Length: 170
Image 1 (tube, rainbow, N blue to C red):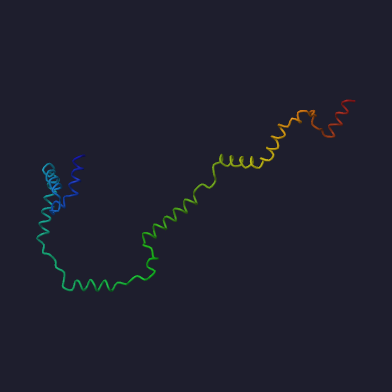
Image 2 (tube, rainbow, N blue to C red):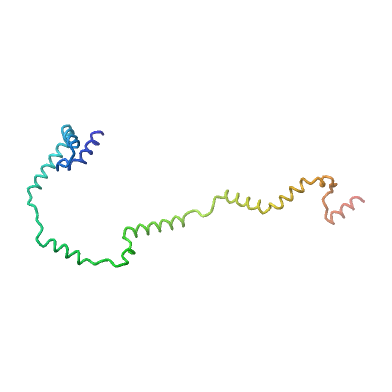
């Protein structure tokens, strides 16, 4: 594993080493590794052969009118109007459309009803707030001492029950 990591480090500086742009430390590192690793040594040799073949090719010189042709093509390009900033780049427009679609999908398919326990607790809290005045009066009446002195009477009965009671007494 350490050998492959080391080979990857060598690959990162190999081109600069072959071009002669590597630092002295990088040159020593590549040469020390190439002495140990046959794969990297073969790769360095392949690159040297490739650079040799490329060096044999004749350099291509641009034509005398190259500069004039480039300037003419640049001048021929249409200049963007004042509203060019308003036209978004295709990638940006696509990303924005996907973000909008994703947001709509999340809102549409997300659960809208809260959990039943939360609804019950909310209803109980609302009921308690509605009955707060009655509960306050109940506490006052419950602790009222005068009520304890009143005689307790049986609940009132309906007229038909009273007639039945009178017949039973006779």
